[in-house]
Image 1: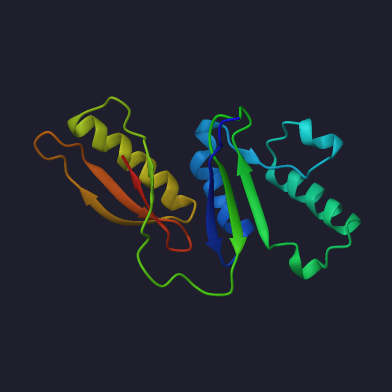
Image 2 (image 1 turned 60 degrees about the vertical axis):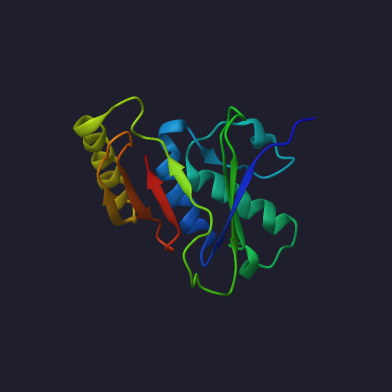
Length: 160
């Protein structure tokens, strides 16, 4: 069996950060991971609030204390080809630059100004969902330009 990839984020609020990344990855069709062993698990509902309500019902049935309900949140690629993103609540805040970051390839095969225009449009969309734009790097000889962003909790990622 070949391994699958899961990317785990530490978060102050897993559900809020998970919803942000759901907006980031929505063009690829990501969805909230449904509760395990539920009839609804096969349901491809794209409504995050509906799936969250199912999770709350599941956690209540399992007698998980309400204060632990926002301790984790996950989003998945329903096709099973993309990585699962898991958001875990941690008590400490982010204090340093990420040693690893995600590159969101939004430029496709575009080059030059057309590429940067596409990245700018995506940056504007993500800022509307809570991202922060931190830097723009212009294309240099034999290189492609990119935009550095941060999610609502300060995790850096690039639009490439």
